[in-house]
Length: 322
Image (cartoon, rainbow, N blue to C red; front, side, top):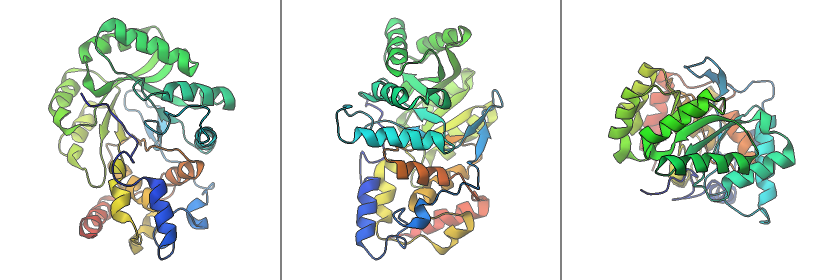
């Protein structure tokens, strides 16, 4: 099965490339860039929106951080301090959810180093995955992940891409009984897995699901998201920028005038607010490798969220954008 990668620049245009090109075209602010003061401003007087985890009522900030690809670098890499600053900025300004996986190269080890440097592990809602086949292999992954991240407990442990699901759910539930895991979940980011994913949702009691969903990838709306609401499952969204496709299409385009009605000052916020407008969505986990991106993403959870009418207007505007 293809390795899951939830950094949105895997295909298409990265956010950094988008911003550099936006700055070079007719006005960064007109392009919805966060390079201007309006986009960088932290609306500290407005709290980050939180939503309840249905199985417990615990309130979770609706913007998280995904760690695939960009968190796989060596600690000696010149970019590593930016990752430290990104997580620190995120956790100190209202965020908590950090999602990772043992299949994301050095990401778990790097998070452990970031927590050691910042001392902020306790402020993180830490989610990882079992991504292998076989009971002992899954147990070994969890043991290694705890060692690498310097923690004795995960807030959320998920079966990655529903691989050997029944086996790993037994392991996760045992760890939950032992106090080493707080919540149980499953993930996918592939349409061709939706049928089996839905069957697992129907037969298993789960706290969380994680699914791919973006303004240009709305297939999860048909059955997965309604089923999650029906079954009382929290929903995490991966690939919210469509692997960079959304930034590629928005390049050089101004935000629509109605974006101000939802307190939106950048394209990233536009894309994230669209997802948060779906009441089934608990939190969105965009890849975040710069502190200014952390601020911009968190600002999508401040101020007004689109209602159903605005959400349809956003779809119409996007579908007509050329």
